[in-house]
Image (tube, rainbow, N blue to C red; front, side, top):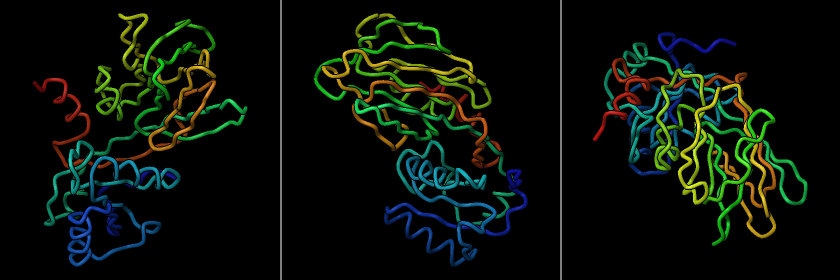
Length: 261
């Protein structure tokens, strides 16, 4: 099923976060444009912040339905400016950003396998006051025998301006076929700053001394505690379309972010 072009949008579904300003905006927009159930809409209009945008994207993983966000939250990096007028025209002229999620397979200390998808990143985080010890394996080959750290993450290009950037990882152009592997507060080796990997790479984390130094794995909003091994690969079989106003594409925003001071 191909992703609908934005100029085909006639039926809009309005989804809003719990914030009062988002709920008020949804009521006003429904009064102007009507409302279609999300499963029958051409485009879903998400009203909230970046976290709510991720929530709506996760709800539509299997539908390939384009999502057009308008900021009724705080940061709103993934959202368009909020304007009520000419919404259909804005959507018709919008630019698409196609993103692919990461697939996480995590095995916990009891041997149970957990799977989840991440649009932004998969992160490993220490659970106690003690640092984590991780072995990093790329495509079956050990590349870092021991990383002593607070954690590490694998980021998509779409997620590279989120937690990855806060951990001093690189911003990745949205169309680049790479993933960022970024340490979180690395203690040893102190100078290791991470790596850029092919989007086809399989990243494996083995947790060393897992009983003494427990680690959790988080794929966006899904957390698995007490993991002993985590595998991360990009799922090219899933395509998600985000819509951005003409001249304010996600690619342009990420480029501008690299020159912000």
